Image 1 (cartoon, one colour):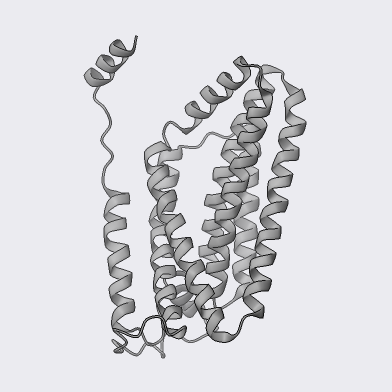
Image 2: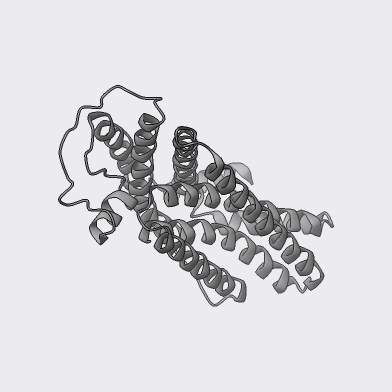
Length: 281
């Protein structure tokens, strides 16, 4: 539940930030006519994402067992790739996100194109919705309790919507850099778990047969249906009988990504910033 809550909150907040900032910008300018098509675009994007999620789930359920394991492997690897890209992108753009969006909105309105803002909101929700769909499908497949996982995702998305509305009304201000750094650490753990789960299902699909020597027996700790099992397997991807390749895969992803996320970000010095500003003036 915790993993899907953070995924729902993080992904939902990214979409809510973009929609909330754009909607708030339009409201401050008194351009309420553009809000209706923007909300319609957001609703359409959500509907498309729901349809995609249902189709993927139906296709997965109708496949034979070995093919299901193969599809779960592909979905897991795609989810890991998306999470990694999202972490890297947000580390670079979190601090300037609001300013960049408002500058783009101002430019679109200066050209007389409110539809560009509508498209911005639609594509933001569509992109984050697709990512969330893949993430949650992968998390559900590796979770020991799909009901709890679904509840966590729904709660995370609801909290994100509430924060987005607060941003739209101007009552909520978030230190985006700090928020995304904190959640990035947890998402690195989730992604490492998804990577291990993908390696595990790849073996079940007979795609990987090397490194299958058992490292330890954690059956006494990782008991299906227990809270500890939900944490270790559902969040961290730790299996009851971890193998060599699973441990290696976990460390290969976890260590460099944690170093990347926690490495201090260099801010430009005042002299450098002043020189840059003078050169662009």
